[in-house]
Amino acid sequence: FMHVAIRHGHTKFMIRIIELFDKNPIYMNGKGQGAFDIFNGQEKCTPFTLAVLRENFELSEILHQKARSDRFIKNADNENVFDIAKRLNIKPVQKFLVKF
Image 1 (tube, rainbow, N blue to C red):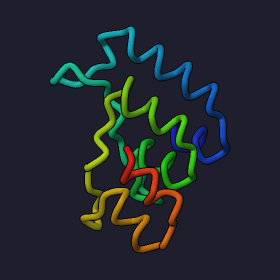
Image 2: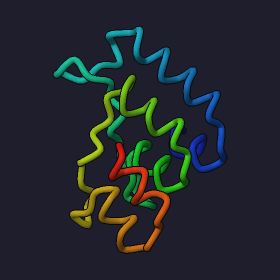
Image 3: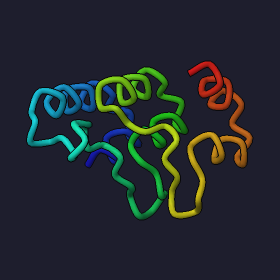
């Protein structure tokens, strides 16, 4: 559901979900981190990767800070979000990730 919300630009909904997960230890992985590094099968993206690639930088920062999403995580094609942005030549995303 997170991937669908991000794909359709439902930033406020995602922020609310992140806040819910952030306050509830049942949604943490074994390392005390939010369990948001979930890949969808179709795009091979985590919610963070998808938000960045869709240039939703506000949500990207929130996912990284509050949900502790791993920006270096690699997908099944052995690519992280910067690799994908570079391959697709998405300059705003590349700039964002370099500053990030």
